[in-house]
Length: 578
Image (tube, rainbow, N blue to C red):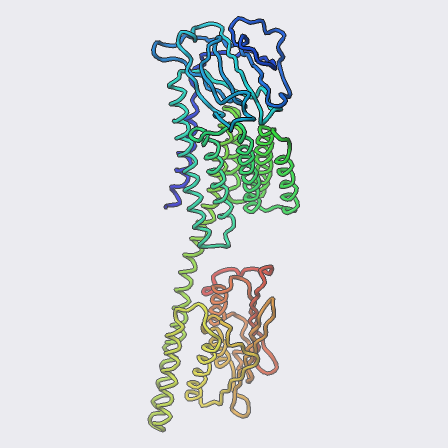
């Protein structure tokens, strides 16, 4: 999947969500609802004095029968052959009457203790055309609320064209599933990206956020095709609040990674504690929990992103705009629609930040490829420099004429060095033993060329260690080039290795007399630039290199840090062309 198509996919989901929420003109007006405990069939009648009924009942003990009456004004009579439908969301099992006529039954009210749960929480009934004429009507419900006796009177209703109610429900559900599917695809895509690079935790957080939004939408709209009894509705709401708890924490946490601030850990802990308090608050205060968590998420996210914009952090201003757009959506629509749309906009902002990071990583990768190519070319140049080849071939001719046996040995040493160079040409790291063999072979060649007694010593070498290719070889070349033999016509090189939990050190010593050129050298040569480039390629900037004169000749120290807490300053400029 092309990353550029993901914002379009999410935008399509948001647009589908918006188009699914177009409301049809209202055809009814709901008046007050009153309640009374007891069971009397005459309470279903349209004409009944219910002035002494209660506006609210707090508790119905032991699943007793109670009634509710709601006066409804029909603003327009239905068309012929197109009856109105009544869509109701009520806690309990009930019978429903319209102007005293039974138009539907949901479960067995009053028999819940003896019978298994029956009926659904959301159901749509057809109102006979002759009963839905323009004017005042009475909706009466005979209910029992055995499983939640303290949850009386919590129901919502909608009246519209019966076929439209059913069709709109299916259309809305299909649109929301497309919306959720977009987040599922994005979640899987970024999960695979994280599995390929497990250090990119923002990618994982974004993937989890997308999956939680997918799960949230799927759970909310599963009611349209899965029968849910009111007894398990609280469990469903707890699951929804759990998804929302994860979303409400992960989104600000993601922004805190992208836009770091002081005391981040403390503030995140306090914010998480606040969300948990909201989550545990009240047995049935799910609407309050939802609003509290969503508003808290927005405020905390806005504060973090605004701080990032104040610090001129990359991408912060655009993300700030998406957060403000979510407020505009909230003011222009209801809470439910604005919540899903706002989450989509916020996720688009998060996706934008990830796209910037991925672009930066791609550019860094391309630069790494360019640098690796240049390093290989430098290694090749070091091996086939014209003056090195000419001087070596000249010395080889002399040895072949004077001592054919040593000339053959000279050729074998030269062939071995070329063979070693060929093996390490495309490697980023090679075993230290291979690097030492390269150095020793080079000393053997230089002995034939310069007729100087070169020697090599080692101390504390760990054969399991790996280093970038030819960096010790380069130090060796520098030592040969800028040194004169001692009185006994010898030059000695010594490699010392030390390691600890935090770092490892390679100390390369040259025991020789320095040339005048070596004494006065201040400018960094190509050799040291090559070494720094190789170290940067392999270790980032977690290394140090010092090269200085010493009483015995020259001292070079390469220190590589293994601790992630140490981050030295990165060198400035091009390492090969300063």
